[in-house]
Amino acid sequence: MRILIVGGGGREHAIAWSLAESRKSVELFVAPGNAGTEELGTNVDIEASDVEGLVQFAIDRSIDLTIVGPEKPLVLGIADRFEDEGLLVVGPTAGAARLEGSKAFSKAFMKRHAIPTAAHRTFEAAQFDDAAAYIREQGAPIVVKASGLAAGKGAIVCETVDEALDALTAILRDREFGAAGEEVVVESFMVGEEASVFALADGRNYVLLAPAQDHKQIGEGDTGPNTGGMGAYAPAPIVTDEVMDEVRRRIIEPTLEGMAADGHPYRGVLYCGLMITDEGPKVVEYNCRLGDPEAQVVLPLLMEDAVDVFDAAARGDLDALGVTMRTGSAACVVMASGGYPGAYETGYPIDGLDEAARAPYVTVFHAGTGTDDDGRVVTAGGRVLGVTALGDDLREALDRAYDAVDQISFHDAQFRRDIGRKGLTA
Ligand code: GLY
Image (cartoon, rainbow, N blue to C red):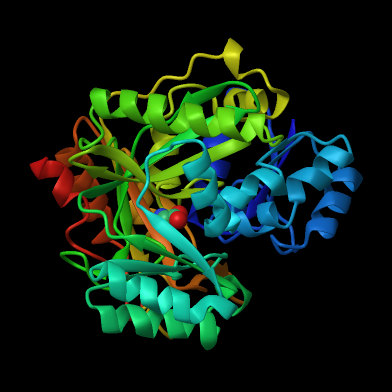
């Protein structure tokens, strides 16, 4: 079976790894991939957002199944184009991917379908004064969000009204997030603990993956600017069986039913970014894909053959498949380039990868890595590696992941020492 994975980060390496573990015979292609995916298949020099290039590649190489990692090609309609060509694909259509591509759309959708989320209002540029008045009326803390895709940086939590007015100006007037800031969502601040819940849907049926927790900020103790995610663990104890049941009944099922009723049946990963509040779980945001780094802990916990699971999702056959998770925990510590999430340098050799990966229960997922002219693996991005380990419990998984991290070095590497700590005390 020939499988194309679209993307080139840690999430896509984790997807490729899970498929390579299959009992089935698979040939993997990853576009554009990284130095880690190159060890599992063939990297293809096509950018993830080059929709037509990817469609043509899939036709030319008789690809049987395509799995789309990042949000941008999904929002651009890659799944629609693959479906037009009769190609099997895991990922929602552009109409369904609006759940991530437009916060204005997703908030209106949640309101229409009575899905729990923070109270909000949406404003366009011409309504700047109305937005400012709404912020003053609501007071702080308050959250100001660019409606469109902003690489995870478009949601600004503001401690004061002045901060919120500055955020409004930055998004709506100064267009610091470009077209993503054509509309702004202003919503009330929710108190609680965040968690990520993933449902894989086939347009009619869905299965749940392990609930996870991400660490968005660069600094220990959740300090400093937001990143794509500095580490993750699963299962997240905050998502008890009772909470999961509520998420299923009050969020996932109404979301999938609502999308189908609105004419956009959902096929692919529905990522519910949640706040577990005193009033129960509420949606912070939807994403239309697996989380990164969450994929690096969720996929290693999947008991079933990943080829069967993704294939069934693409074919609409998930009802015939029981999906279960391994017992125990998985933890992932992200190693990043010095300076990230700001400016950083690349091209530094990475030492200790083989030693780290030889440790039992450890997998080193590559994110921003490449190969230099001498064939050495070098840094090529902000988030460089996701060092992942399994354990009988979270403590063991974390100890193994950090032992492996300590074997790896590259110039100016940075990582958090407190990944998973919240899960240990839960
Ligand atoms: N880890 C956050 C995300 O994938 O959006």
